[in-house]
Length: 279
Image (tube, rainbow, N blue to C red; front, side, top):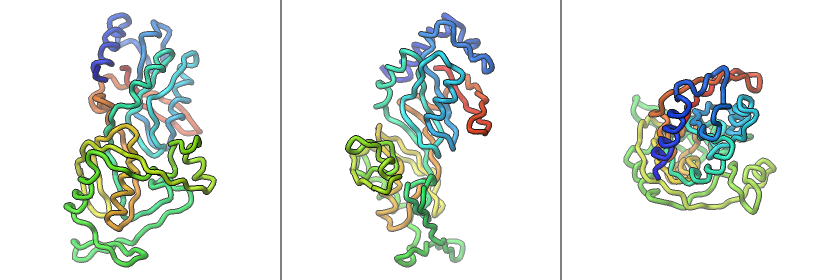
């Protein structure tokens, strides 16, 4: 059953038995009415907090319910997460393998040790030069490198479809030899491992060197940082993911969900407003 149809079925039950519009009030966050039918929440994760921070925040408002998510987002990333409550957390395994869509911005003038802006110790910035408002190039250690054309970028992206073996980011939650990769990376041990990743399609939304914005439809387990890495290496320039937003999981699109509510919360001494929608 398609994800949207699956969610719609349960939303229909909730709406009939409880009354969808009054199911949740932001202040009360009432959950005591027929909890077994209130299954899933869509959350628009803000930047700067981890996926587990999101869980911690919602646990404060659902102290008697078990709660978990269908897949992590990096701290710098924003966008769609799906949370499940109580017995329905067991159904999350059915969602993990669904395809996902992202909007990503890559900066070709930077290099970091994490391949994104959450770098721990190392960042390199290459100087951007512009001549006559048209010609652009980077001053790199290897010399001057001209900005790639849009056609060059498209040809490199085309090689990734439908799948390609790409190196996993060292700073990731992927387990290698039974240990999370980022644990070893933080300790100074970089383990290199490749993984076949799937890219169904891409769309270049904007290109103004050194910035490239892409929409990517990918398979489960595909790292957008690995795509940025591949592009930069192939084009002989930098590669750093500076923005990432997950826009869909399966056929559940964050921009098409109704009835968004704001959850106001103070977390780590900061006021966080997290949008959520009942599914």
